[in-house]
Length: 300
Image (tube, rainbow, N blue to C red):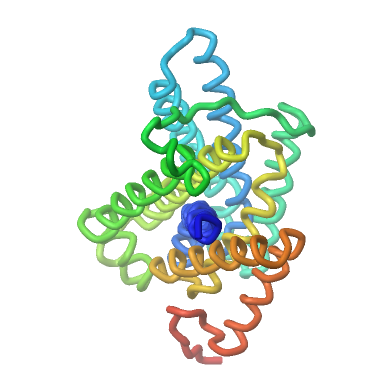
């Protein structure tokens, strides 16, 4: 029974990380109908920022909670700046270009950021410092859930709550929803569309940095390629739930996380990726728009 509950917690942990990444994909797609293939690299840069910040702060013997909070904050701020920069450099000049142009630009930006981090850091795996404090009350159930997993679940829940309030209750959130619904009409109503899109990139990148930092703290290591496979899986989760649907991205992420966890636990960890993509194929065959997506008719 402990093994089963451990797999459940593992699935929730994976799903939480995928959800933090998938939100960025679905937000950007919902507003500009573009898949930001550099999003996984922003996730990776956020994790490296936390690594550098934690390494520096550990030299001053700061308490673990302070290191965790400051490293996470710096990762979020730096990733948000990178997200806005990526939009300004790679996407904004191509707003009116054929859709293939920004797609190629997104792939190019992804490769550039990967190699940039590889050259400025290292191509090898680096140990990630322990920044999550140990919770003594978890000692009796350590076989089921550890401190890092609990923090991942708590931070994800908090981030989802703040994000929901931001989108549903604030002026910027209304502007984001208006831009996603009809960009031209939003402009006619006085919405600064470029500012809204930049804000969307900033928010999505900040949330991705949370995921990158937390999963690196959980695994205990980091590499410049961690954003590649995580980005692909988060994209799969977003498509699984219905690309452009925020609830769908979250639902798809947790389904994907649970599938991987139970497949690796009861079958083989060698096939967890295969099962994730088999699940995606089945969903798309049965419901091409995704679980919570809407079929949209386009005039041709």
